[in-house]
Length: 116
Image (cartoon, rainbow, N blue to C red; front, side, top):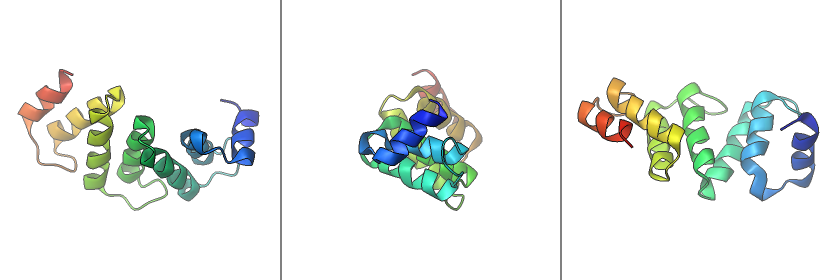
């Protein structure tokens, strides 16, 4: 994805590309960096069922990108993306269980998710 591609997505406001619009806004590619706009587009992507969008909303909650930090909501989104077979979501869900991030520490669940 380059600056021109991101700008085209912004200009078209293509709802099928909301995840990439979020990425462009988060990193300031082709548009002014705007974490709130990034979160809005990631969330719109998540609402369509896109597992990458769901995962990225979790990252936003975890890191406080465009939204107040909330480890519990981060975990919920990681797990939802994992349930949609998103490999990074599976890994993050396992890590949350291992360290007790947003959820009670549970080594059995860690191994369950880590094996997937």
